[in-house]
Length: 240
Length: 216
Image (cartoon, rainbow over all chains, first blue to last red; front, side, top):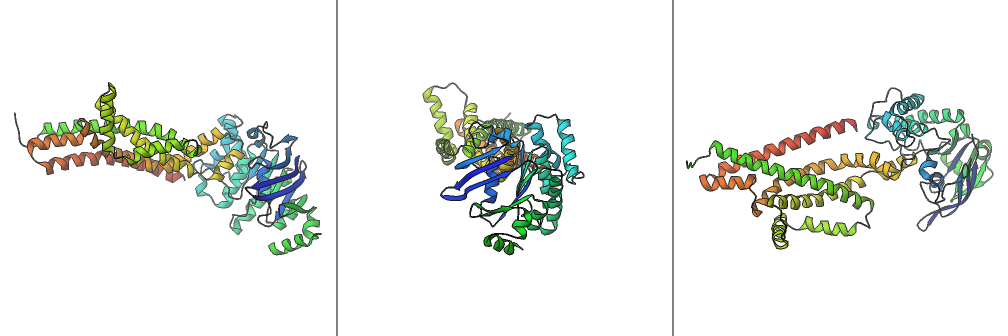
């Protein structure tokens, strides 16, 4: 379970998250939608401690993420994250990209890590690209590799930070299909996304962020289909 | 027997000089690479704490190499250090190379996108693992052409050590010129030897770079 409790986050004088509380239960898929600058991506970075917070608490399975005593390297093993810019490691092959963390962080043997990586890459449809370097792949393939790389750590949670925003329109589908597959497998997921229809399809709950706060949260049919607040309706209209 | 033409022995004499040039280059680059790597990492990762280091290295980058050779050689005599002129040459050239290589390494490390490092940390890699497996390999590819340039430049800068009494390739050719009075010929031959040595280094480097580029 991810518990976000009254979290405040600032960059210098600029407060971007202004007291967000949100709980994500095991097995749940929660989508966060909202305009740019609403604090949704920033909040995601705070969940696995990539960004420090100024106030509030984030607990993952009861562990305080922003406690000095918390071993973040250890905690991050169970929280996978996929970024907007897929961030492939350009000097490693697709297979090596996925094998790196299982080998160096989990201490798996080369054979074990390779078997694991092959399995994950096949799962996301890249079984024929193992020896290729990321530079030779399309954006969609690189993003699927990034998903396999995160999954190879057998995480309990997956965070997606606008995973399809930097992709050409014709490549969005393949990445969304991979994410949908994960959701159907029962993975606990938090998605920051602009794909409203996708969010409606796969989410258990949708949160609309505005000005660093959760403005509206509820079932997808309610928030997207029948929003209570005028701002939510206006945002949905603007992205359609 | 005294001869006034360019003999086979003169050529061997030049090759001996070239051998000294190569040795100087090797030691200087070895020293410069190790120290420059260390200093460059410090400059890139701890920019504030390593600021004094930058000031010191700036001195070595800014003062003409010839002055550094002569001053260090004099210092050696004043302090009474019992080291050879060859060692002085290696140290001065090595520090000079380190000063340049520091900046090359720094720019290489800073060229690794913050987001790439963030991705590796998000997988649970520690700070040091991120450096070892992600930052250094990428930085190396960025820094390599600059390093190769430095090797070639240092190889030619070794010519300045003749001012502290070391007979390397250029000094050897001057000695031959003094005797046979054929500066054009001898300098052409010496130049050709420099060219061949540089070419070999450059070609080896280009081959390595090409292999990386095929990958990325």
